[in-house]
Image 1 (cartoon, rainbow, N blue to C red):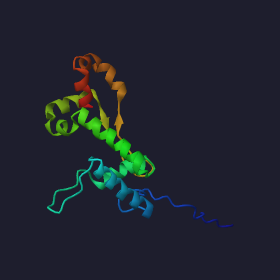
Image 2: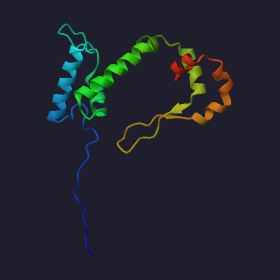
Image 3: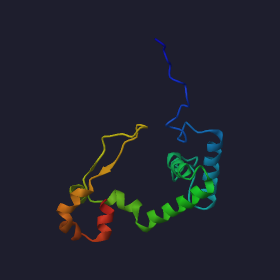
Image 4: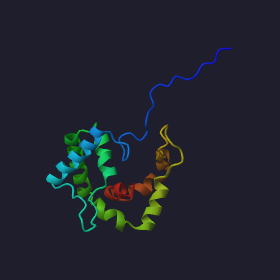
Length: 150
């Protein structure tokens, strides 16, 4: 019998492009991205008095990964996201959202995690078929408020 050992093949690092797993060019892109955002007034770096940066590096890296580590393209997406957050008052909405209303919204929008993708990241699943049963109740809530509940 002939034994065959698996070929070494390329090894995929599931954390490539994340904090602690950046190549030199990726690290340089992150630094350039931070500088560009600071100049544009979209980002405030951490200060020596202990004030944290306005955005964590992990979040900045999400934008860079989404745009192939192009600081220019990532800045365009980041600026659009910040404008969306401002338009929808996200920073105020989250800490002031009524807990009872949130719990009630979970009845309308069943969702869960539990499974993971091939890289071990959690999957977030919405069960949209459940909406048929409560459509009349959902329609009684203004569209903007329904959007915020999701």
